[in-house]
Image (tube, rainbow, N blue to C red; front, side, top):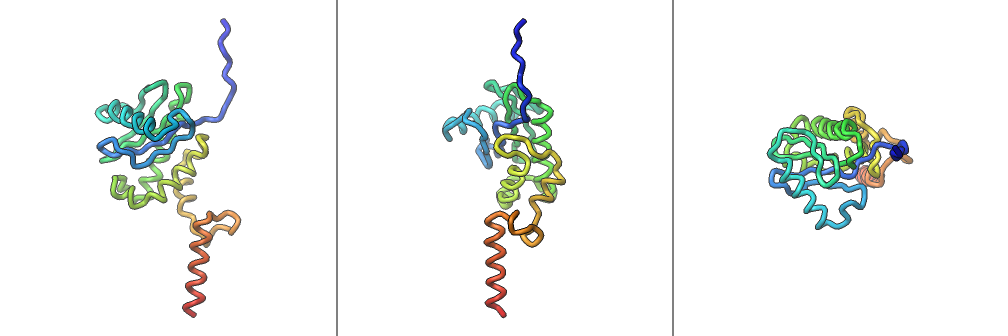
Length: 177
């Protein structure tokens, strides 16, 4: 009985997807080269959507991958991991993403509201998963980090966008004096 001993590793995610009612991509972030081209990614997304949009379950095994998903009004949220990944951790990522967006969008998680707040979605996903590694599963922490304003954060911890916005505001106020 020579069973390979799996080395301990960090919990990882292969992709995070958000599709609309027609199966069209609203957001997709792939963390590895399982589907290297956009054509392959879109074909995979259509396949996932076709297999999951009429079911009430929360998990599927598809093309050797574990897919956890949730639907809400006109959106379908997917978190994809390898077949060996812990389903509970993938579901924790999915719930964290959904709950974070729900708080950020004031419980109005639907297509139009999401499209109007894409920057919040990008930041939330980056707070939850970085390079495929799961960093956070608490939606309160994610919302808090996304909501941080440039005024509260030291210059060394600000993003380039925050620094530029702060500089614009300072220049505007200095010109108005």
